[in-house]
Length: 286
Ligand SMILES: NC(=O)c1ccc[n+]([C@@H]2O[C@H](COP(=O)([O-])OP(=O)(O)OC[C@H]3O[C@@H](n4cnc5c(N)ncnc54)[C@H](OP(=O)(O)O)[C@@H]3O)[C@@H](O)[C@H]2O)c1
Image 1 (cartoon, rainbow, N blue to C red):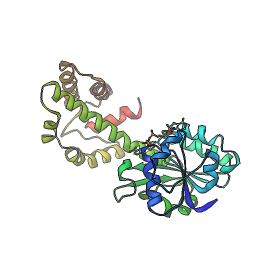
Image 2 (image 1 turned 180 degrees about the vertical axis):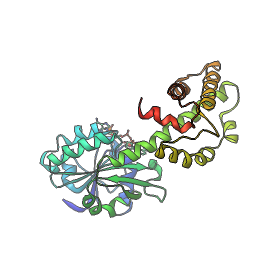
Image 3 (image 1 turned 45 degrees about the horizontal axis):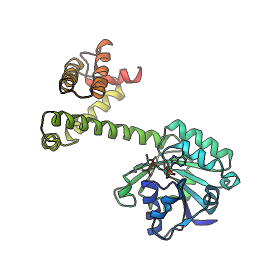
Image 4 (image 1 turned 60 degrees about the vertical axis):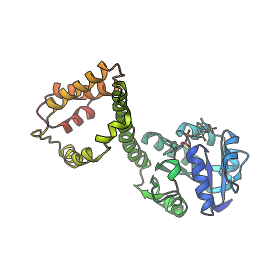
């Protein structure tokens, strides 16, 4: 076993970027992937294990970069006693509950789980722009922090295994929803014969929304939703106009319908004169 090396299992775009980064930092790196051909695309230097068990046996630190946690069970289920004494750092996406269940499953096999979420695209892994969230046993994280730091700035969140994915999915929720919202607006423009890029001339991402968020977070924390400036009745009427604009352009309305539904239900629960952050009450108690 290589005590200063690392094993990477999962050679999708992210796993391959991790392997390249570990190798560039001089870490002995062992790799395994379900589809063996994906290792062909790696730079020379990585050791290719013949089986997942061999890959796990090669290093104390085993990094997983898989589509989800289900893939971990399929791969490590056959690793047998090789798992004992390993720190498995699972940087795959999944739910907080899935990470907690995986921690128990690995503990039964003598391994520790450190769960993580990579806040970077594959092309910036290993650069200053990359950061990675971690949660799980502090001692296991700290024992491998120097190696993990090669991938991106590590941020340790606490011993509850679910924390990293809670933070990660909360961020991904904003990311995915924002991307989808832009695509919906691009579609509105192109349906009207205007190029999508024209939309960005007046609606650059971010700043107007960012300015509203501190007050909204305070309202959510305090459970009080002052509505003097913009209330749910007014915003809900606008949400209805957004649906109408999409429908008359012949577009899919699933996304604007979902937003309108939150406003409709907030109004039905008596939040019409409250601020829009009161939609949180509907989200909390669906
Ligand atoms: N790509 C990014 O920019 C990015 C950014 C941040 C986070 N992430 C996260 O990083 C993780 C990896 O992402 P990715 O982009 O590299 O691609 P991906 O397509 O999500 O992951 C592919 C890897 O998972 C393996 N896999 C999937 N199901 C499997 C199963 N049932 N059994 C065995 N292996 C299985 C694939 O093996 P095969 O090659 O055999 O199919 C491949 O190695 C994901 O959780 C993703 O959310 C990705």
